[in-house]
Image (cartoon, rainbow, N blue to C red; front, side, top):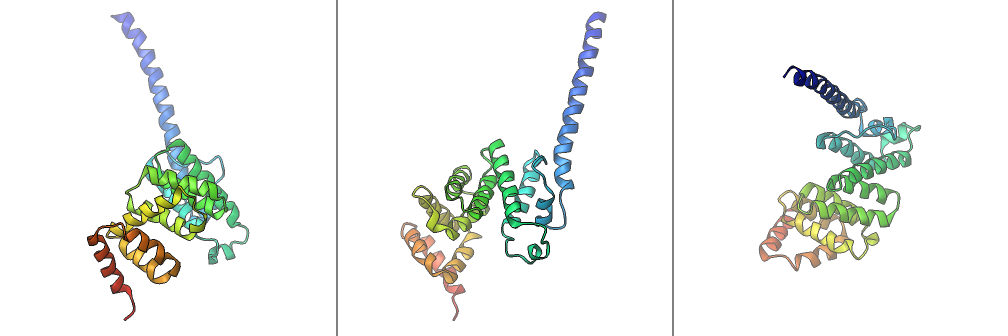
Length: 225
């Protein structure tokens, strides 16, 4: 019994050291991500280097990806006009690397695929944009907030969607029409974008009468009187 205890003690000590090391590593991965957070999304992404972690938890990674989402919309922003030392192209590449890295590590992380698709669109890499839009749609077909992000990317660059991506665009559009949060956004698109009208008409034709009436009712409330 004494011999067994003498063997167990070093094993427990070794396990404790390993556990402590893993805890320290996880803390560094999560903690450094938050330390890199600056006043704005643009400056937060600008601070990052390729070796910096993106965190381990979903919440931490979402925060980094949201910073990238805002950064990828900032090309014409006043902030970048003032911060002349920061180049939008460099920020976009960092966001592409971040999103692709997270998606490679967690292939079901639909938000990461969507941000990777936006970064690819910014770079004019249409094959990658289509590939990443498809991956995002396949991993989260019914999440309205991610679907809206995918729809925005695909709608802006509709002429660059391939044959596989256009049916997925239609699916996201139908999902947004059925969504209480999505339908006002889609109605505003109809009012403001003439080219969009034929695309939504084609999708609405295959939807239920109830969905059609609800959409038309929402649209009428937005039209100028």
